[in-house]
Image (cartoon, rainbow, N blue to C red):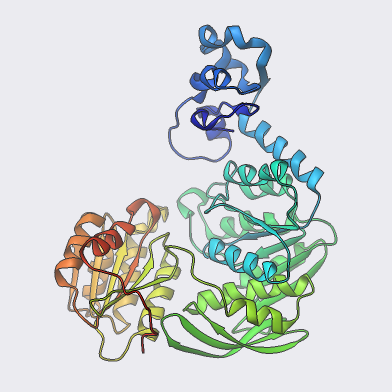
Length: 461
């Protein structure tokens, strides 16, 4: 337990402090929870794990509990060692997923596919994919070890070998690599460094395991040489073991394609839109194939999924307009992919509106990247662009320079929501997307405050 407010009798409290956060790749300033260790022990914790130096600083609070304290040099590392011990005792297969974009969606799709085979699947809560969220997920196995398999996303944002650390907690039997994109480049410097950090997943897999690699991404495909076992590829453009053909985007919430695997083919009526989501589906299909599922069972499972909240979620309003809520995160490739999804699924008579938040952690080239992305958005048939916060102003400048006639910049997501509420009309199709720090979900909240959602959601044609 790492939150003293949630401690129950019998728990062990891990007192996190700023040094651990810094040593383990967490950006920002965090409270020293050593100050709450005494409270946790009073609430019934059997022990508290603390740093030696923090104990000295909080001596007056903690001295009377000395016999219930466990001293370590790094509390997060200690928590991770505990999680590894739980994993070793559980000792069942792990599917680990990483990529610059799409991790959570691919995780949910993969878990859904494997559950369709009758397996009970442990998965990260939300996007608990870092040095704290990952072990928090794994230690759940101590209370409930009856999971057959774990599907865990692994993330990184710094050059501190975060994925390698996560692999030491739960070495993957199946290592799924989705893509390498210029995300977190502010901290890693170059896309080559990002690729190297992502490759830690394949390097950290179990001997004899399987690397599941995106053949359409050259940097990912090159990771095959690092595999300690077999390699299975997935893709759309390039030759791959698991692929999709005859893609048809029939409307929001319906994509049809032919799934091809080494054991056969089957038709999929996929309830998510966008080529990027088809690739996520193929990654899930490849994992299903690794665990012996038939192509028919995989196709049936993919036909029954739903979009995770804020990740391509289609919201239809009683007022006759449709909104794609993709507020969870953003980067240039993901934004353009979702703009293409907007265009592909919109009826010809619809007004298309893009609300695009500032894209964070792009490094020194952030201004140029935003402006270039704005130019690319203007090359699509988009009617209105609203840039939200910070460097999104450059997105608007780029779009205007390339000929978009209706573009506006606003300071924050509250203002963007108010602007959209004032201008939305029947027939509009809207994309809302932005980095987490911009909180573009506030735009959706403003709409839901003002307008009713449809009860029934027929396909948009």
